[in-house]
Image (spheres, rainbow, N blue to C red):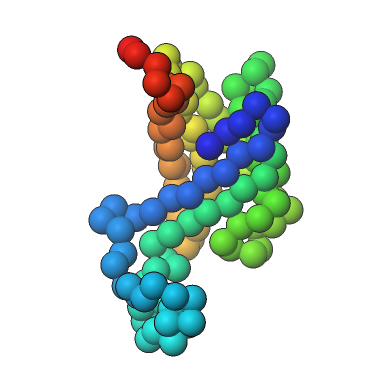
Length: 117
């Protein structure tokens, strides 16, 4: 989600989503087996902060203020962007587990509530 005031939020869930722990309360989640909690953590990612664009370089920067991964707080996540109609394609480069990776995220703009296409 990007808003007009310059804030963004991303939540990424694995497909298919993890089903454990399936507890309904925070207390029950804390009491769940460690393997269930680890699996849930490994299959969910979230961060938020502000965002800025550099149209000439076709990059967007997310200064990460809060993240599920505490070590990312304060980092600038730079993404290459492409606009294609109502779609925003973000490409990120990373180096994880000894390998270079390129990840693409496709965001679809939603119509305003009640709008007819």
